[in-house]
Length: 313
Image (cartoon, rainbow, N blue to C red; front, side, top):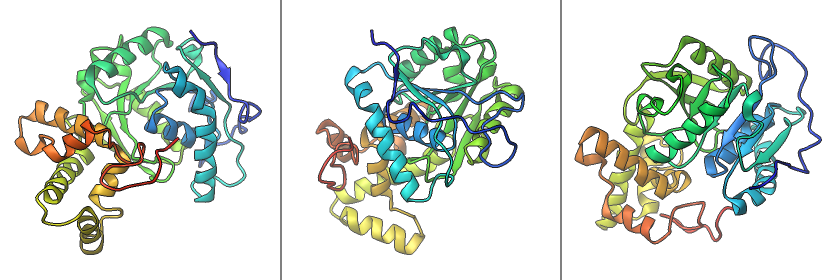
């Protein structure tokens, strides 16, 4: 068991004052946004960075002690990168930042975001633990890329407060977010999450619940096909991405995108789509699965479809 930790380099940060408009940090009820994020993986760290950079306080919960020990330096690094890229409001103090290995202290959160591994059992367990701790009615967001929200809602004491928000990686650079309203998601939950995302200056696109929603349902089989093309020797990864960028306007190319997503996460999402739809096009190809088995998970491990020299810290 680890005690709660204030991150030294960010502990002195202050909440920005109350104001309405772009990047404001108050809810519609006049309460300051206080965000809890579960999971300090790639997405959890990037979501945390986005919120802090917009002045929103964050409590980041991570049960892995080694990962928890690196949280402060990793968030500091991402904040520096985001500022250099002009992705955060200029001159705005970062939100107050604390870390913990437990949900103790999360009771005063205005919203909780679950950003754990893309596996239904793991997410359901995290959501059940969170809903047991949070105050009644507190919205819970699952940052799922493929698992139907209504499937996860059974783990929550009040399914009306669960909603999906699919942040793209890295969230501080990609403003558009896919918001998934499950059949049991309440109006108050949707309104509260819209309010939070407005404070983070995100562009909200609300879609109905389904396996993979819109983005993963379209992107992931394209990546799967791109991997098959490389495996068959038709073209190299570089050639596939160059053609998709130059001819079809894909910003990074499907295989560089896969490395950014994480090939392990991509395979998990494809399995979810395959199991929920029965469609063979979603079955992860052997070339992708072999990379996952070899530990070549993409940018975060230093090698995927491309070589990066070193893993992300």
